[in-house]
Image (tube, rainbow, N blue to C red):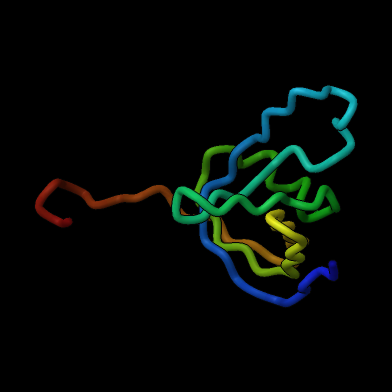
Amino acid sequence: MSADIYDDTIYGQILPIEREDEEEEEDSSLMILVDGEEQYLVEPDKNGLKLMDHMDKWVTAQGTITEEGDELLIRVRDFTLDDDWSYGDDDNW
């Protein structure tokens, strides 16, 4: 089975991956959860590791997606964090 590789932009929440096997610590330990269901594993390169400082934040990430079977992997090329929402008061929704 061959992998599909393409460039794309995704929007989701940066979350840790809980692993049962601690020996896999060198693998990606982050994911970007899109629409509450698709999990993109973040490749632990220079840009991917920068996301470690922004756990639980929302991000727009551009990069190369690799789809192999049910697994989605993103090599982040560039990302933008969502600013904290500032509405001033409840009437500005």
